[in-house]
Length: 127
Image (cartoon, rainbow, N blue to C red; front, side):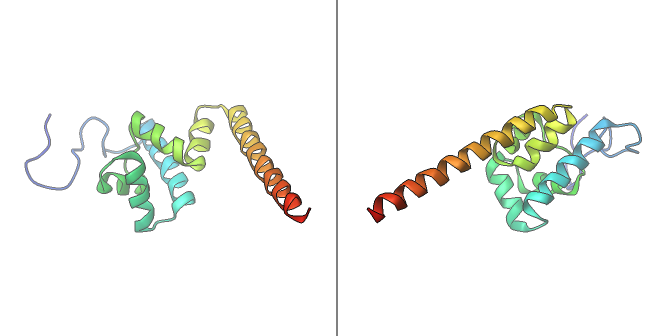
């Protein structure tokens, strides 16, 4: 199978497009799209940001936002590295809610540490 010489559409064979009735990729793509829209909205700036994170073409990223297709493994790793929404969606899809609790706990610890540093700086200025 090869891509058509002209046109801007993906081929409909091998699970791309089609009826989508029993394709688990469709659910995955929709979940990732929802996570991307929660974190960036439907803005053009969001598409550009995600494209810069992943190195993917903007048209590809627009397809992710629309839920037509999901990101590949390497792109998914980049998205999870930069977006807590995507990471949470991925962990939920994998049935690993316990890991998301650990991620949120680590983020809370970091925020508390930053707050303590700020309080110490203010305290030292007052004295």
